[in-house]
Image (tube, helix red, strand yellow):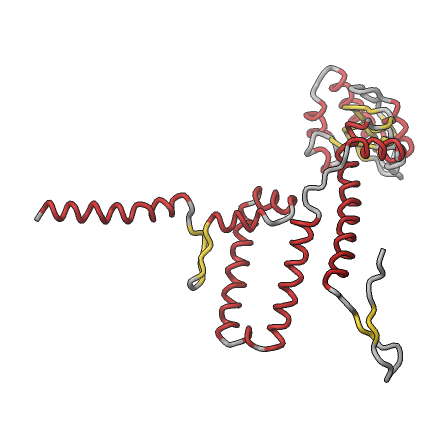
Length: 303
């Protein structure tokens, strides 16, 4: 009797184990009615999204949860609509058919017609040579600053106080103190002070102060400016990195060129396919010129 019981338990464990294992490696994330979404289902749906959307979803669990909720909520509403016969109504069946046609046509064009387009190296190099101006890079300075406010109508005393504060900060920097630390403690530009005074990359003509811009572009990489007076106040600037104006090399421009040409190739291939499918399918559009006149087919002109 006990032997039979042990055999029965062993059989039950053997039957239950695969299901439990499947649940462990591919857990259910949500369900509504009989509709269930497992982890692999959600991963597959995410993989069908554009690369940028995929990255955002993978990096933000809250977005994935929101997507899961949206899918289940729409399924719940659709289930109710089906239960009430909305999917059987002619006007909705027509719209569903058009939506399906739209989705299938777009997917077919993207996944079959224009998939795996490769741009030949010589074509990319020719584009680079013929569009050299596109790859010109203006002079840039990656800079940070310490800012001391100085109102336009400041009194002599206020000016003296602001200058003393700026000079003290400059003295600390000249003695070797970390710029980011001094900026965080002294700078009155609260936003940049949080980031150690970082202003990002500055290009000519992109600032609203000629005095500030002139000082920035006279600095060399790693160099510290004296105290600079502008209509906005006093600044101390450090050039973290300076890049002279130049033309980007072919290797630097390859990604941009490939993306640009790929779009052109995809458009051309798509247009060729559309012209072919119009001819093969016998697609015709009928439109009467005048009321009462006989309708004549309008066909895609042959190339």
